[in-house]
Image (cartoon, rainbow, N blue to C red):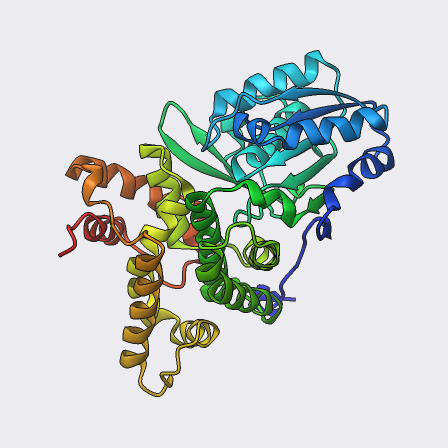
Length: 392
């Protein structure tokens, strides 16, 4: 058989997950199912301050499960944080990792797991399918509604020397189980709620227009877009509404199932470069870049963008692509403006040399491969330049 005979095949893999309020209380059951002797509990200072670690450790204490806590993790987890975590994991002779936190915590936990069984330095695993040995058992309890790191094939780590985020993509980093509990997102403030919600929105968008999309991933991408557009406006003004929190957590889950299998595109490639270079929040970078990249990509995937428009309430018919594109961009910018995002990078003081370095890094990001239009490095430089223009 030829390669062409397999060109339409698609795979779909995610972790086992339990979705719903109180799911986190099932942690001891799954720890016991995996026959763990000692847990390496990965988190960050913010999660500890919010009280989630006290609750989780109380649950583990009651079940007589031994653990050690590692919380020295910053937003945009750094390579040296991964390596230090792995040292402690080995010193403490742990045999299972539990990550409780947002995408940074879960990505760091994945990095620790990779190095624990594959040795070497975490930076050596950049790219696709570079992991040879299975990682230790991994259980995730996400506390944000956006990244879906808890079910995905992705881990994003910052190379501290190069000041760039890099992607590790492998089904080896899919967790064994995720306990997805909307109640854990009640501790998010308004800004984090917006950034993570829009991160999920970009995940769904890029999965929908990806060259590797399928009818299966499209279902999840579309449902994610609908749920976010229907709920985020109300949620940012009602942060304690568990119904809205649950809807955003469900949207994040759908978006994760879509992008983990369809991959991403130029927004994420540029966001990885920008976030690593300026140490900015990932969701913020994605949000700033989204309308510029949609504008750039539109003509290469008009039907997919039409489907996206339908998900967020755009009535403009596809028979007029130019008008549809205009309506779509207007709706995106209106949403971002309402949420306080559409400010661009005018205040980031990026120099021409900065932009060239950012574009070089983005052009070498693996997410580029599934973007509907393959950009040149010059194209990416122009897009960064547009985001730096001051808004009138």
